[in-house]
Length: 132
Image (cartoon, rainbow, N blue to C red; front, side, top):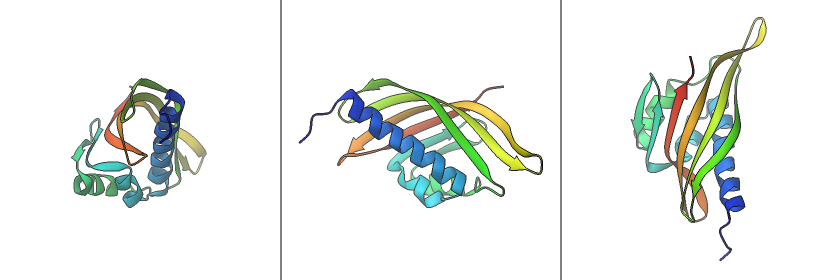
């Protein structure tokens, strides 16, 4: 078994965060669901709290894009880490492409708790907040 390091935890966390953004922008709801543990929670400010795979699937089905979109996630920082749990914060900017081109629609923050099981990092809780 390999040694768990901050770098390996950060890489696993970053991979989950990036996979989420790509799945969200492509409207791949089932892929989003698979990035959460079965008892995981997705909390999106002003939109709801979705607990468990069925609720997450139903909640994210309402967010399937109707036009090109892009979530840019940056400045991810591990705020704590251990072999089987990590917390992280990230900034996000959400863009949509309309007739005039790409435009920022909102900015916000992700507060994440991820768990590692069988060498896979998935979200236990993802809280999304938006900045005014």
